[in-house]
Image 1 (cartoon, rainbow, N blue to C red):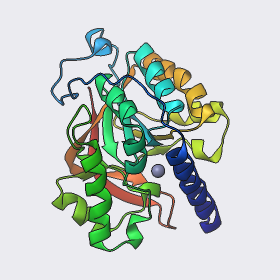
Image 2 (tube, rainbow, N blue to C red):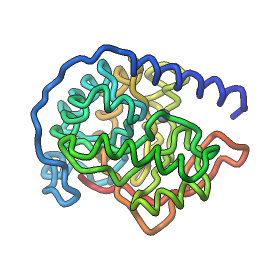
Image 3 (cartoon, helix red, strand yellow):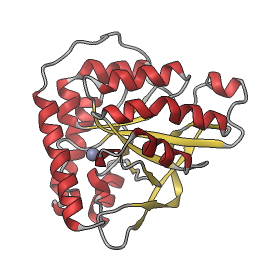
Length: 260
Ligand SMILES: [Zn+2]
């Protein structure tokens, strides 16, 4: 992907983050509930044997969003599905009840830094602050501090990985990019999801009507193919990811997809 393209997308995302941070708080359900445990019993889909082909992790970045996060969660619930939400610390602080509700609904809430910087351009102490401040906001919001994090734009390096490891966190990238942030039609998001198979991680974003529009079909297609939306767990085995910010668009991360 071209530098200009990356920069344009970066600017969009920063602008979106600032816009969302300025959005007036909209109250949601403040009901506290248990955190989704990694060892929970099989979900409804599992009990019906609906996942013979395995698990695709659906991941939603850049929330919580007062409009799309409740919409996405409602669609997931209607399909007996769950997903991982990589949230931005500043937005989680603005919309804590939306984060609580995600966890009450059994979703995984993960760390997408405090204010969405290029982590690969920060010194280690700033990287550490980005992760720790976000975890401090998320800790206790109907669950513990996350162990999964995703660097904004997939921009990472050895320093970022080392800081994350020192905090007991696992970096999660993606294998399939829906390109939803490029404002592609919903059918293109659906088509990207159709290319994902067992163990794959699909990148999606908050704040986009087309992503919400595509999600029911994405979930229906997964089910039709014998796949379920899976959770992400740390792994000792490296997995190859697809990242688009350098010429060499392959890198590795240590996580895998499993049943909820
Ligand atoms: Zn992001």
